[in-house]
Length: 311
Image (cartoon, rainbow, N blue to C red; front, side, top):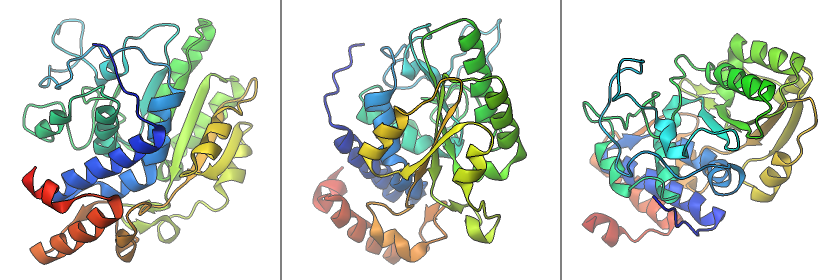
């Protein structure tokens, strides 16, 4: 498979939002706000930051091949959409598995996956799951309970460091994972072992399933807390591509790099603001509500509704 993507990072971010919007309207619900907050950082990762090879899996995802084991030749991991595993290639771990639809949309925008892949979304026997697992496109591991992804990725990074492999390990996280003790234990371990080949981008959108994080378990000055563990921490505007680029290039020797991307869960879709903080999963109570949102968001995203209705 030869990749031909020549889109700008800005266009990829817009494409991610549009695809998740289309899918949410078509299916009467979806993880829409995650596309609002994550579009720029994921577009930058896939289009500029990650060193990946050509995909090793077909552009239309395969059915679930069964649990990975030495005795199951049909098993695969979704990391095949990131290309082969090799010393010079980066590894990319997605920790918040409920961002799966946003990841799928990014892979489609990057032409690593066919746009018809979403026809298989959440279908029985399929691999394109609503909550991604190790076989879902873009996913290398099942991150289980929230906050397990960083620990798994840091173990891979430590092994690569000891092998003197030049490839980096990148991790995408949500800020809610800092409500879990495992995240802080991992920061301490990464700092102690000087795992400096790992780069972590955190979507700090300050919302979670039960509402605003400030009303559930406020994290206070997250940047200061993270930095106190002896890692390099950069807090930036998560929708400013220039700021994200600069942060990604600011790693220090002997220290993991943590980038706090401060974002809005309605960036690019201001109509959603009226629902904040109930934005974790957007669903509709009536056909009228769906039409109102569809009309407003289509206008914000520059989408021709007549084209959408004919799709």
